[in-house]
Length: 273
Image (cartoon, rainbow, N blue to C red; front, side):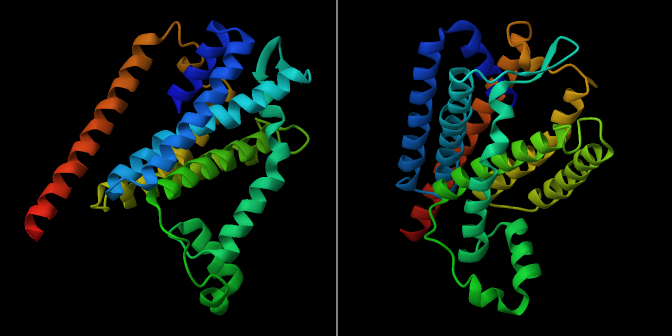
C-alpha cells in the first residue's frame, strides 16, 4: 500500500501530465496482461503472484490514474482544510462509482459459490436454507483472476467506505462512527491474521494476506487523516530509504515464494515418477 501511494506521487511530481497519463494507461495494460498470463501459469502460488502483481498495476494504472485524469481534465478541486489538501480530487469523485461496485457485488452474492467469508456470510444471512439453490456453483477457477478480483474489489470497497466516512455530509473524519470503523477493521484484521497463520498452502496464505493487509490499512488511513502520525509514503523524496527497504522486502518475499512453489512442484513430479 505505501509503495503504490509513493509511486503515484513520484509520477505526479517527476513527469509531465501528458507523460504521466500515458504511463498510467500503459501500467494498467501491463497489469491486465500479467493477470491473463497468470491464467496459463502452472501452480497455485505462481498464479496468485501473477494476479497480485497484475492487480496492483491494474488498480494504479486503470483505476487511480484514470480518476486522476478525469478529475484534472474537468477541474475537480481538492478538499482543503487549514490551507492543506486533505483529499485529492480523484478520491472525491470515486464515491460516484458506488453503484458499479454494488453491481459487481450483486453478481458475486447471487451467482457464485466462493471462498470469501464476507460474501458467504451475506448469502447465509439473506438466503438461509435456499443458499445452495441460489448460489449453487462457483465460477471457473483461475487463481490469477481470483486474486486480481479480490485485490481490486477490496481496495475499491475500502476507498468507498473511507470516502463516505470522511464526507462531512455523512459523517466526517472525526466522527465516532469513523473511529469505530477503524477499530472494527483493526480487530477484524487481527482475527484474519490468526486464521492466515493456520493456512499451510502458500497460495492461499498470500491471498489471505492480501485481504488482511487491506482491512488493516483502514485504521492506518484514518489515523493518518487526523494527523496521528506522519505518513512517510506521501513524501517519497524525503523517506526514500524506508520505501526502498519495503520494496526490497517485497521483492525478496516474492522471489522466495516463487522458488518455494517451483520446488514443491518438482517434488510432486518426482513423487509421481
